[in-house]
Every structure is written in structure tokens, then in C-alpha cells.
Image (cartoon, rainbow, N blue to C red; front, side, top):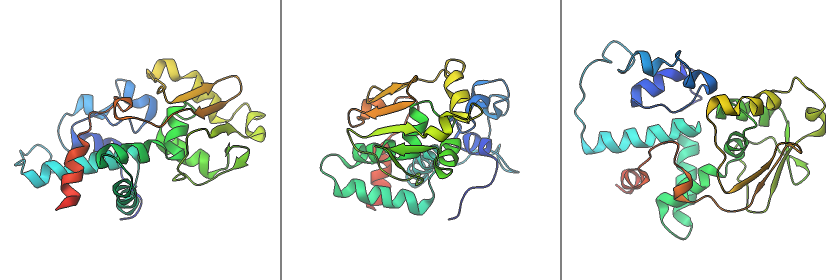
Length: 213
């Protein structure tokens, strides 16, 4: 599957849940889910039978779109989680949370994960002093994310606007990140745990059951 290019709000309507894919728009009255609480398309108002497979598939699609991954990227993340010690579902959330684009978003340096991916691709960030432009790069405990000096000097850089809008977006920073707004840095001081992913209700066990069949 290629990159999703359709309207992001359709995803939230399909899953009947806010996935906060559009930044500030999701917190305003313009949110499509608040105005049309039914699925998109001609048959969006129809009732669908919630079979076991459908429930598990929708849960997988929800988390995949939430983190902005393609089907192939998500499957690779799941395989990596299976190889790790511990509970596969919790390992999967840890793998997804430590993606560079997600860390940029969690730190408040971007208003959405889509913007975070764009900023990473444009080389606005560095890790431990080295520029990294791969959104899927998995950060490790003890690594420091920082904004490049060239980007700091540009006051029109979207990072500054994202930090200023954190209060209006109701954004919170997870306990495993230590962010310094003055220095524009974020330290991964711990590994994300299951209780840290509270902004979206996810039943990761359903995803494990889907892939185990």
C-alpha cells in the first residue's frame, strides 16, 4: 500500500474516533467527526456487522493511521516487536512511540505527526549532534533530539509555532521525555511503557491476535 493521500478526517470518521491527525483542527469546531458521526462515502450510514475479524482489523487500521504508517512499515514494526523480550503488544507500542517522527510530535516540536515527518525529512533535527532525516529512525534511551542551529536561527521555523500552540492544543508530554523548550532539546530518559499511551484507547492484544492467525 502506498502513502495515504485522501482526506485525513475520513479516517477518524471511519474509525468513529478522534485520531488527532490534523493538529489544531481536531481541537476546534471544524472537526469533521463532531459534525458527522458516521462513516465516509455513499454507504457510511449503514450498520456493519462487527465480526471478530472486522473488530481486529479495525483496531490494526486505527493504530496504523494514528502513527501514520503504511501497511509494510507497520508489519515490519510488528515483526520487530515479536522478536523483543516481553509482551508483544506492549513491545509494539514501544517501537512505535520511539520512532523519530513520533518523538518530535510528543516533544511538541510539531502540531501533528504528518508535520513531524515533513520536518524530519527537511533535516530540521539532529540526534546526539548528527542530522537524521529518516522518520522511522528508532531512538534509544539516553539519546538527545535537538533542533539544528540553522533551523533555530529561522524564526519562521514551524517548530516555534508548534511549541507556542501546545496549550491551545491540550498537548501533553509523556514522562519518558525530558524537553527543554529554551534549548529546543528532548532527552529520551526512559523507555515508553503501556501506561504512557493514554491519548487514544488502543487494545493492542487484538492486533496480536489478528497477526497470529
